[in-house]
Amino acid sequence: NAGVMQNPRHLVRRRGQEARLRCSPMKGHSHVYWYRQLPEEGLKFMVYLQKENIIDESGMPKERFSAEFPKEGPSILRIQQVVRGDSAAYFCASSPGEWLNSYTFGSGTRLTVV
Amino acid sequence: SQKIEQNSEALNIQEGKTATLTCNYTNYSPAYLQWYRQDPGRGPVFLLLIRENEKEKRKERLKVTFDTTLKQSLFHITASQPADSATYLCALDMNRDDKIIFGKGTRLHILP
Image (cartoon, rainbow over all chains, first blue to last red; front, side, top):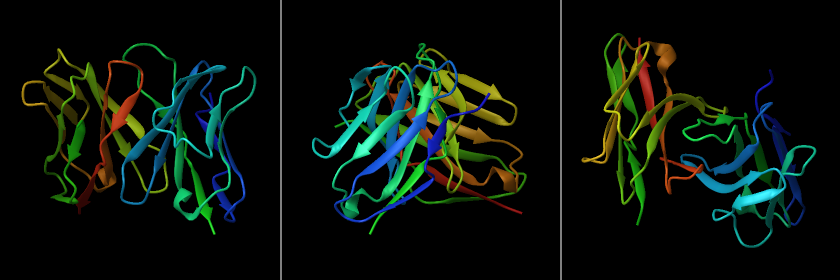
C-alpha cells in the first residue's frame, strides 16, 4: 500500500514560469492538505481539499496560486508566474477524513525559482 | 493572535537520558494535539495523538502529556538513542475541524 506520492521531488523554474506540483493521496484517503515549508520555518497551511471541493483555502496567497483535487487523478497545486519568494518545500498530506485522524505526508516537492 | 510555541533552540541530550520537548499554545482550545517527527529532506511522520480529555499517552519509549489549563504539551523520549535525532513538530486543530496547524518544531540531537 503505497503512501502519499508527490512528484516531482525537485522542480526548478525560471521567474515567470508556471509550477505544477502533484500529489496522489494514500489509497482510501479522500482528504488532501497542502503545506509550505521554508528553511528553518514550520509548516504553513495552504489549502484543504476533498474530491472536487476546496474546503479551506485560507492559507493560499490570493494571486497566482490555485489547487484542485479532481474526481480522477492526483491533487494539483499550481503556481503561476513564479517568483523567487515561492522557492520552498511543498508538502502534501492525506487523511481518511474521520475525526481525530492523523495525517500521512509525502516526501515533498522542493521548488527552486531561478 | 493564535500561536503555537516550541523551543526554537536545538536540544542536545546525552544518549540514554530522557529528552523532554515542550509545546505551548495561546488563544486556542484544541480538541486534540499531535506530535510528528521530521528528518531532513523528508515529510513529517505521525507519532502520537492525545485528546483534550486525556492527561497522558504512551507508545513504546514515547510519552505525551496534555495540560489544557496550562495550554501545554510535553513530549518525552526515554532511553534516548542517536537515531532519535530529528526535528519534532507539535500540531493541533485550530477550529475543531480537520485542519491542523503546526509549530515550528524543535531540533533534537542525541549525543552518543
